Length: 369
Image (cartoon, rainbow, N blue to C red; front, side):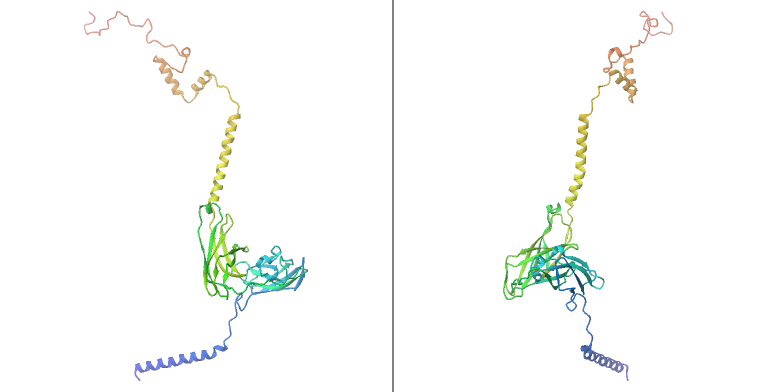
C-alpha cells in the first residue's frame, strides 16, 4: 500500500468515528440532567413566608425568605388592596429593612400596623438595590376594614422596545446649587388590544442604598395598539444634589426602565462659602479697627525741644552733622530758630589779621624795593 492510500484510509476512519460520536450524543441528549436554576431566576424566584396568617395591630410577625441574592438589602411592608396602588397603599412608617445572608436567606420580625388602604392585605418584600425582585405574601390585619379591590383598566399594555437615555445638561445655576434636570427618554410598544391615551408613568429617583422616591408624570399623547411611541419624562432632583443616582420609570406597577445618573458636585456653592469665610472676618476686623481708632484717647504732641532731642539721638544722625556744617559755612537752617544757632567763628582774629597796607604783590627774588 502506498503512502497516499494509507493517508486516505486514516482520514476515512476518523470521519466514521466522528459521525458515530455525534449520533451517540444525540441519542443520549434527552437523558442529560438539567442545570440547577440560579437564585433569582424565573425557575428559582425568591420567596417569602409569614409565621402567621393574621395578627392584630401592635403585635409582631416573623417574616422569612430564601432564594434572594446574597448580601442584598430588602424592605418589608404591610400593604393594603394587594398593593395595587404601589407603596402609597403601604404602612411605610412601620416598615423594616433586612440584609440577606451569604445563602440569600433572611429572618426578621415585622411590627403589625394598619395600612392606609383597606384589606385584602399583603406583606410586600422587595429589593432596594440591584435588579428588581419582589414577593407578596397574603396577610390579614385583625380589625382592619376589608373592601373589594378596585377595578383595574385592562387592554393597554406597554413594553419597552429600546433602552433609556437621559438627555439635557447643566447650566451656570446648577453649578451654584440649582436643582439638576434631565429628560428620561425611551421607546415603548403597546402590546394590548386598545390604545393607551395619555398614560401616567411613575418616575423614581434613588440615591445610594435609599429607596426610590416616586412621582407621577403624565405623558400627553396616544400609543395605538400594536404601535410604538417615544416617551420623554421630566426628571428633577433636589437643590444641591450630587453623587450617583438611579432613575426608574414604571407603568401599571411594572418596572419599565432604569438608568444611572452621575450628578456633579455644585462647586459654585463651595466657592461661595470659601469667599464668605474670608470676607466676613476681614470686614469684622476692619470695623473693629475703625471703632478702636475712634474711641482711643488722644495724646498731646511732644515739645519741640524734646522732639529735637529725640531727633538728635535718633537714627538720623548724619542730618545733624549736615546742619552743623551748613552753620559753619554761613548757611541758614530753616528748621532751627536764630537764637538756637551757634555763633559763627571768624577765620582770623584781630591780632593775627594781615595789615591792610601790606602789598599784595608777590615777593621777588631781589627782595622788597
